[in-house]
Length: 176
Image (cartoon, rainbow, N blue to C red; front, side):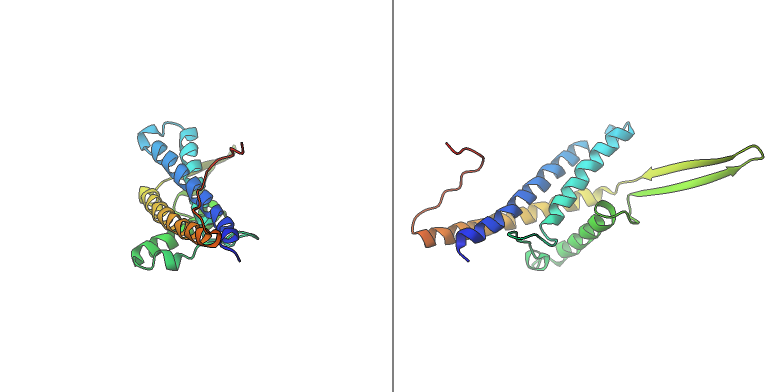
Protein backbone atom coordinates (compact mmCIF):
# COMPACT_ATOMS: atom_id res chain seq x y z
CA UNK A 1 0.00 0.00 0.00
CA UNK A 2 1.40 3.37 -0.94
CA UNK A 3 1.89 6.09 1.65
CA UNK A 4 -0.74 8.21 -0.09
CA UNK A 5 -3.43 5.53 0.01
CA UNK A 6 -2.57 4.88 3.64
CA UNK A 7 -2.89 8.62 4.33
CA UNK A 8 -6.35 8.60 2.76
CA UNK A 9 -7.33 5.85 5.21
CA UNK A 10 -6.06 7.89 8.16
CA UNK A 11 -7.70 11.21 7.32
CA UNK A 12 -11.06 9.98 8.62
CA UNK A 13 -9.53 9.71 12.08
CA UNK A 14 -8.58 13.38 11.94
CA UNK A 15 -12.14 14.31 11.01
CA UNK A 16 -13.59 12.22 13.85
CA UNK A 17 -11.33 13.70 16.51
CA UNK A 18 -11.95 17.24 15.22
CA UNK A 19 -15.69 16.59 15.58
CA UNK A 20 -15.16 15.27 19.10
CA UNK A 21 -13.10 18.34 19.99
CA UNK A 22 -15.78 20.69 18.64
CA UNK A 23 -18.61 18.91 20.45
CA UNK A 24 -16.78 18.73 23.78
CA UNK A 25 -16.07 22.46 23.62
CA UNK A 26 -19.78 23.14 23.02
CA UNK A 27 -20.68 20.82 25.92
CA UNK A 28 -18.27 22.75 28.14
CA UNK A 29 -19.95 26.03 27.18
CA UNK A 30 -23.35 24.63 28.16
CA UNK A 31 -22.16 22.45 31.05
CA UNK A 32 -22.83 24.82 33.90
CA UNK A 33 -25.68 23.82 36.22
CA UNK A 34 -26.76 27.45 36.58
CA UNK A 35 -27.57 27.37 32.83
CA UNK A 36 -29.79 24.32 33.25
CA UNK A 37 -32.98 26.23 33.88
CA UNK A 38 -35.06 24.01 31.61
CA UNK A 39 -35.24 20.46 30.36
CA UNK A 40 -34.33 21.73 26.87
CA UNK A 41 -31.11 23.31 28.19
CA UNK A 42 -30.14 19.98 29.76
CA UNK A 43 -30.91 18.14 26.52
CA UNK A 44 -28.77 20.61 24.56
CA UNK A 45 -25.83 19.95 26.85
CA UNK A 46 -26.32 16.18 26.78
CA UNK A 47 -26.62 16.25 22.98
CA UNK A 48 -23.19 17.84 22.63
CA UNK A 49 -21.67 15.56 25.26
CA UNK A 50 -23.08 12.44 23.58
CA UNK A 51 -21.85 13.66 20.18
CA UNK A 52 -18.36 14.25 21.58
CA UNK A 53 -18.35 10.83 23.18
CA UNK A 54 -19.57 9.10 20.03
CA UNK A 55 -17.11 10.92 17.73
CA UNK A 56 -14.25 10.05 20.09
CA UNK A 57 -15.33 6.40 20.26
CA UNK A 58 -15.52 6.10 16.47
CA UNK A 59 -11.73 6.40 16.44
CA UNK A 60 -11.52 3.07 18.31
CA UNK A 61 -14.45 0.90 17.24
CA UNK A 62 -14.76 -1.35 14.21
CA UNK A 63 -14.47 0.53 10.95
CA UNK A 64 -15.69 0.16 7.40
CA UNK A 65 -13.71 -0.46 4.26
CA UNK A 66 -11.02 2.13 3.59
CA UNK A 67 -10.94 3.36 7.20
CA UNK A 68 -8.50 2.86 10.03
CA UNK A 69 -8.99 2.67 13.77
CA UNK A 70 -6.75 3.44 16.69
CA UNK A 71 -5.56 1.01 19.35
CA UNK A 72 -6.00 2.48 22.81
CA UNK A 73 -3.27 0.26 24.26
CA UNK A 74 -0.66 1.89 22.03
CA UNK A 75 -1.87 5.47 22.49
CA UNK A 76 -2.11 5.30 26.27
CA UNK A 77 0.74 2.85 26.94
CA UNK A 78 2.89 5.44 28.73
CA UNK A 79 0.09 6.44 31.11
CA UNK A 80 -1.99 3.52 32.45
CA UNK A 81 -4.43 5.88 34.21
CA UNK A 82 -5.38 7.34 30.82
CA UNK A 83 -6.06 3.85 29.50
CA UNK A 84 -8.35 3.19 32.48
CA UNK A 85 -10.19 6.48 31.86
CA UNK A 86 -10.50 5.53 28.18
CA UNK A 87 -12.06 2.20 29.14
CA UNK A 88 -14.58 3.94 31.43
CA UNK A 89 -15.45 6.43 28.70
CA UNK A 90 -15.89 3.66 26.12
CA UNK A 91 -18.10 1.71 28.54
CA UNK A 92 -20.18 4.86 28.99
CA UNK A 93 -20.48 5.14 25.22
CA UNK A 94 -21.68 1.55 25.01
CA UNK A 95 -24.21 1.80 27.86
CA UNK A 96 -25.42 5.38 27.54
CA UNK A 97 -24.95 6.66 23.99
CA UNK A 98 -24.99 3.67 21.67
CA UNK A 99 -27.29 1.35 23.65
CA UNK A 100 -30.10 1.82 26.11
CA UNK A 101 -28.62 0.25 29.23
CA UNK A 102 -28.11 1.02 32.89
CA UNK A 103 -25.82 4.03 33.27
CA UNK A 104 -24.72 6.60 35.78
CA UNK A 105 -26.61 9.53 34.21
CA UNK A 106 -30.25 8.69 34.09
CA UNK A 107 -32.87 6.77 35.98
CA UNK A 108 -36.59 6.37 35.60
CA UNK A 109 -38.95 5.42 38.39
CA UNK A 110 -42.69 4.91 38.53
CA UNK A 111 -44.35 5.53 41.89
CA UNK A 112 -47.83 4.11 42.25
CA UNK A 113 -50.62 5.73 44.27
CA UNK A 114 -53.55 3.37 44.45
CA UNK A 115 -56.67 5.08 45.76
CA UNK A 116 -60.23 3.79 45.71
CA UNK A 117 -61.04 6.09 42.77
CA UNK A 118 -57.96 5.67 40.59
CA UNK A 119 -54.49 4.33 40.18
CA UNK A 120 -52.10 7.23 39.76
CA UNK A 121 -48.67 6.58 38.24
CA UNK A 122 -46.10 9.24 39.02
CA UNK A 123 -43.34 9.12 36.43
CA UNK A 124 -39.99 10.47 37.52
CA UNK A 125 -37.07 10.92 35.18
CA UNK A 126 -33.89 11.87 36.96
CA UNK A 127 -30.81 13.18 35.22
CA UNK A 128 -27.50 13.63 36.95
CA UNK A 129 -24.19 14.38 35.38
CA UNK A 130 -20.82 13.59 36.93
CA UNK A 131 -18.73 16.40 35.51
CA UNK A 132 -15.54 14.42 35.93
CA UNK A 133 -16.64 12.45 32.83
CA UNK A 134 -16.75 15.68 30.82
CA UNK A 135 -13.23 16.62 31.92
CA UNK A 136 -11.90 13.10 31.39
CA UNK A 137 -13.31 13.02 27.88
CA UNK A 138 -11.88 16.45 27.09
CA UNK A 139 -8.43 15.30 28.23
CA UNK A 140 -8.61 12.04 26.26
CA UNK A 141 -9.74 13.86 23.12
CA UNK A 142 -6.73 16.15 23.38
CA UNK A 143 -4.33 13.21 23.83
CA UNK A 144 -5.80 11.40 20.83
CA UNK A 145 -5.80 14.58 18.76
CA UNK A 146 -2.06 15.04 19.39
CA UNK A 147 -1.43 11.37 18.57
CA UNK A 148 -3.30 11.67 15.27
CA UNK A 149 -1.46 14.87 14.34
CA UNK A 150 1.87 13.11 14.96
CA UNK A 151 0.71 10.17 12.82
CA UNK A 152 -0.32 12.55 10.05
CA UNK A 153 3.13 14.16 10.07
CA UNK A 154 4.70 10.73 9.65
CA UNK A 155 2.38 9.87 6.76
CA UNK A 156 3.12 13.15 5.01
CA UNK A 157 6.86 12.61 5.38
CA UNK A 158 6.48 9.13 3.86
CA UNK A 159 4.48 10.52 0.94
CA UNK A 160 7.18 13.15 0.39
CA UNK A 161 9.85 10.44 0.28
CA UNK A 162 7.77 8.43 -2.22
CA UNK A 163 7.15 11.32 -4.59
CA UNK A 164 10.54 12.97 -4.06
CA UNK A 165 9.25 16.43 -3.21
CA UNK A 166 7.58 18.33 -0.38
CA UNK A 167 3.89 17.72 0.30
CA UNK A 168 1.53 20.51 1.29
CA UNK A 169 -1.94 19.84 2.68
CA UNK A 170 -4.74 22.26 1.91
CA UNK A 171 -7.94 21.78 3.88
CA UNK A 172 -11.38 22.60 2.54
CA UNK A 173 -13.21 22.31 -0.73
CA UNK A 174 -11.32 24.88 -2.80
CA UNK A 175 -10.69 23.20 -6.14
CA UNK A 176 -9.97 26.31 -8.19
